[in-house]
Image (spheres, rainbow, N blue to C red):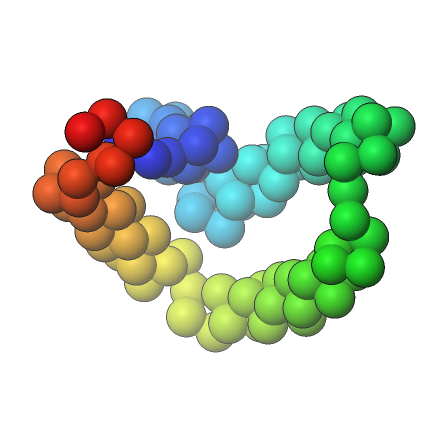
Length: 104
């Protein structure tokens, strides 16, 4: 469906474990950060990172993260859960009806 493990973890935590949406997102990030750091080290050693491109993208990502934290606090957990669920449904529909050029 085009979803990563983080999306599956969020669904599991919120639907099956009854964890609040914002708390589940924090748990998801706790799993992602060590793996992201390890991947960064490996790709840096292999010289596969173009730092001149990465740094501006990372700067905008950090600003976007703080904006997302602020907005998620404003809209609350219930609406955030509905938006997230709707987004996953749209992604699933897109995956069903989008022709994959690699497979054709």
